[in-house]
Image (cartoon, rainbow, N blue to C red; front, side, top):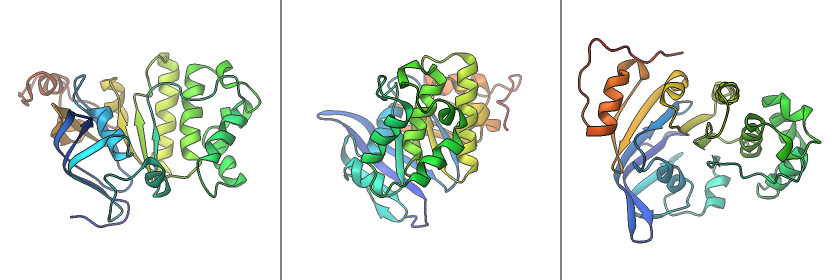
Length: 251
């Protein structure tokens, strides 16, 4: 079992909600500094995998090892203290409170947060510094998503879990949010992304992992798979060859 610093190793993971099991022996290895996109059809277990890593679902089998330590079964507050942050799907900020006040609220859940950490967030997302006195509800959809990521980045995580950040955003806002995720990754933070916008995710991810029926059935760089093959994996679980199809670009 890998024990290198900042390696996420998931082996034979089984998890779900009460009696409803969603993950059926999931295996995934994420190296330090990677940007991995979790892809798959609806109900494949992508969001459940992120929530399980963050301690929000019941683990019934297998293991999650982070930084050489088994973390499966721990509470979210314990996961957070170990350098993992989670940005859930949807807007979870306080719309009537200012950007500054939202960051204050996030700071209350992160022991040891300093003013320098607030400046670190504003350096990552300069628009938030400009809007710091604005109520969060007055921000654009893209700016609200940046606030969500900023609240998570206050703790300077080494692993950032992001669930469907493009939901409800305009094309321009999606471009801005994905550019910020690339910048976070370039700063050395490992990113594990769940995203239904497959084309956009394939443009930014260094590697893709395809889930189907609660298991990772394929993983590799975007350049190794075509649009048609990805669709085939989603529908049938098979990687049908399509030599005349174009592969996803890499950046």
